[in-house]
Amino acid sequence: MPVLCSSCSEKRAVLKRPKTGHSLCKECFFWAFEEEVHQTIVAAELFKPGEAVGIAASGGKDSTVLAHVMKLLNERHSYGLQLMLISVDEGITGYRDDSLETVKRNQQQYELPLKIVSYEELYGWTMDAIVKQVGLKNNCTFCGVFRRQALDRGAIMLKVDKICTGHNADDVAETVLMNVLRGDIARLRRCTTISTASEGDGVVPRCKPLKYAYEKEIVLYAYFKKLDYFSTECIYSPNAYRGHARTFLKDLESIRPSSIVDIIHSGENLSVREGVKMPVQGTCSRCGYISSQALCKSCVLLEGLNRGLPKLGIGKHHRLHEKILSQQPLTENEERKLKSVDF
Image (cartoon, rainbow, N blue to C red):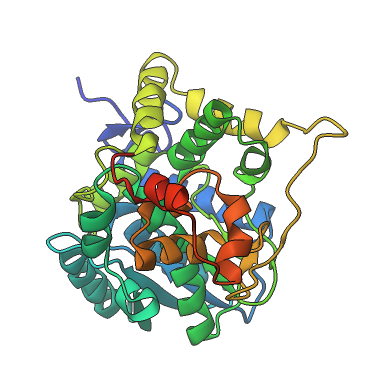
């Protein structure tokens, strides 16, 4: 016997929500998903009428659903936002060039302005060239640091007031787990924040409208809405540390579906003991970007690439920052330690 939708009790249910366990028809699922995102936006006061908002668009399911839902809610609830898409071309042959074609189609479908910034244009390096030098271990460190700064630069070019990203509940929970496992108190304290205030010149405030949306529900929404998105995983990410946290989280979810949101709430309610020394936010002496060190992570990574010392930005080499800034030569022993790509 067909199961009726637990919301409208009229239509046949086509799915069981991973987040709540409710059996819903397509229309009720769409409405529930969209209104939950709306409640997240309203409760956290993410936007103000008249703001220009850049949507970080990769062509993947999360950013495609985010663009679709933001446009829909902006019209349905009269947010009064000026929406546009910002995309980053990391220079990954056979992956990013294909996904950018999806972004360009999304731009036509949603009739939103699009700005694409590339690593090659900003840093003089593509991820293909970086991986050739550093190998397949820790390449995600380079990509993550460069992408964050590239998004800010693209946002500044478009003169947007805020950037919204497609980070979902699974992503946030994974980040909490990773920071616990690494003992990274500074990041653990801020990783569950739904929005960031402006951290200085060159840094645009960010927010996560999909913070409480489960990845499985985003996939279901994209599938039933027949959205146009790119589903291939990055060819350089199989060895990413995040993958281990993701596997662990999926195992927890299979036993207890609420594990994802429970971990997020735990992260939100963590407090740092009084007296614990925290990094002081400053600016990079070279490029002016936010940094708790003399040089920001991006400048250190770039310096290492340009000098043929790929390990320079991996691990703790803060004592070398003064040498780099004053252009002093490194000792033979320092260069030997930083040249190895077996890390």
